[in-house]
Image (cartoon, rainbow, N blue to C red; front, side, top):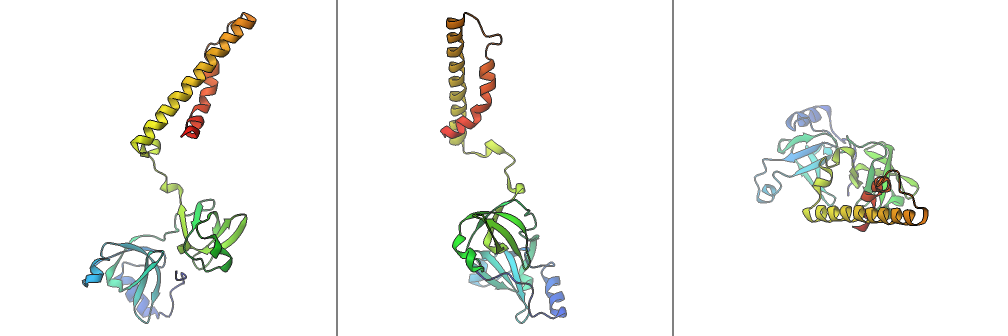
Length: 217
């Protein structure tokens, strides 16, 4: 992976013209590729990537399509479709280190989960991994933000998983009910009294049902 860096070697005139022709692209923006006519270029049309930098000498933007692919394109072949990829990130978000970070100490952590601590400089974030903090480029982080949560919740599960979860919940409730009835029977036999509120134990223990059912799955 190439390190994300600010705009380099660009005079103000070329920057202004490039920004105007690319719908105001900035480093970190999400851009869509369009208008390429070559055979290899046509395969890129419609794909989206992240702007990593603008090369003034070539008047081209470098676009990261994946952790292993970087392409250089003219401004007129790019359209801005979203703001900086880390614009929604915030302290406390879970992050996975991917690729090969530039910081040598963090290179061995590729694939590890960490927590965002604060925003750094030069498109880096301070990330806490395994009790230590590292400066990691935003290009080497995959972050799950609160906005990424599926609003459908359990409905987003596959039908098979929903069915298993339903049976697990039912089985847990029946088990708790059986335990409550057995306990009441034991109390009646030994003490000769009946519980004031029948089923109260089930009501109290029912709060454990979701956790127990998930543990079974």
